[in-house]
Structure formats: structure tokens, C-alpha cells
Length: 169
Ligand SMILES: CC(C)(COP(=O)(O)OP(=O)(O)OC[C@H]1O[C@@H](n2cnc3c(N)ncnc32)[C@H](O)[C@@H]1OP(=O)(O)O)[C@@H](O)C(=O)NCCC(=O)NCCS
Image 1 (cartoon, helix red, strand yellow):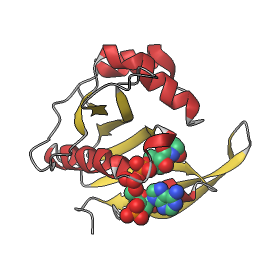
Image 2 (image 1 turned 120 degrees about the vertical axis):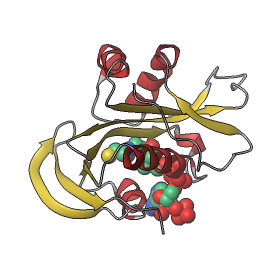
Image 3 (image 1 turned 180 degrees about the horizontal axis):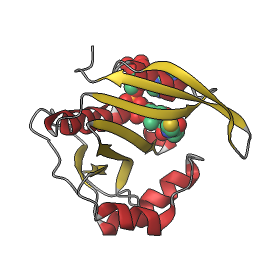
């Protein structure tokens, strides 16, 4: 995995953005399933961790939840290729949403990719996923295309979003 640029990341009181490790993968897959994301699964994430162009990060709780054992608030998986950042998956535990975790993960991914020379970013998102689209728009993403019935279970169009990379407004 490529090194992660945390220099510009402010300190949070109850979590840290850190590189993902193989020990995180069980919970990453749990979050992925709970969020009903496109499923990569343990093997794919494990393989991705070894790729130098991958940006794999987690929001790690300062203290694991005693009841659930959860050590993470969320994760982001992305890759830089041909000077373009491709966000593959981002998910935050439902109970931890709207507290800036998704934004912190995006900020570190974008900063890291820019340092590696990326000048654009792309992703696909369910057409009805207003929360994610709203987060992405903060980073300059705009809809540039639509893929009919791209998703299954339930079937839904994908919006293709693209951004020229810049700091959040
Ligand atoms: C999308 C997701 C990652 C956002 O994570 P989060 O930690 O709740 O996001 P943040 O608290 O950092 O929110 C940052 C901004 O995103 C936007 N946003 C986040 N959730 C939103 C919602 N439910 N409705 C509208 N806007 C929302 C807002 O602009 C928000 O800023 P604000 O709180 O100051 O208004 C989270 O909702 C999630 O895990 N969803 C399920 C998985 C998913 O859809 N992933 C994307 C697949 S493409």
C-alpha cells in the first residue's frame, strides 16, 4: 500500500485516521456488508492492501467499543492510477455517521492522492444515495455520466462522478 499523507489531518478526540492493516479486514468486511456496499470481501481487500497504488485507510477508535468489540468507525478503499484517484468503497458504521468521519477519510484519501500526482478523481455511486453524493460534492465531484441498472440487489442506476482535485470548501 502507498504511504498515507496524514500531515494535514487535524487530530480528532475519539478516533485516528490510519493505514488499514490485515487485522482490520474482518471489521471492514462487516462494515461493507452492513452498509450494503458493492461487496469486495476479505480476499479482495487483502490483495488490494499489497498494491503500491492502493490507498486503504480506516478511522480507528481511540477505544474499542466494549459491547460490540468494534475498533473502527469506518474505512475507505481507493486506488491511484494514471494520475486519477478512483474511490472504490467508503463506509461508516451507522451509529457513527454525521460526525465527520466520512469527511475525514475523504480528506486523507484526496490529500494522499494529490501528493502522488493525481489531478482528478472518479467514482460510481447509487443514483439514490443522497448522503454519499452530498459528501462527494464537498470535494468538487460532479455527475458526468449515468450507467443504467449498474447495481443489483436492489437494481439501480449508477451516477459516474468526477472531480478536479482540490481541498474541500
Ligand atoms: C456516505 C457516508 C460514508 C458518509 O459518512 P459520514 O461519516 O456520515 O459523513 P460526514 O459526517 O463526514 O458528513 C460529511 C458531509 O457529507 C454530507 N452528508 C453525510 N451524510 C448525509 C446525509 N445523510 N444526508 C445529506 N448529506 C449528508 C453532508 O454534506 C455532511 O456534512 P454536514 O454534516 O456538515 O452537513 C455514510 O453515510 C455511509 O457509510 N453510508 C453508507 C455507505 C455508502 O453509501 N457509501 C458510499 C458508496 S458510493
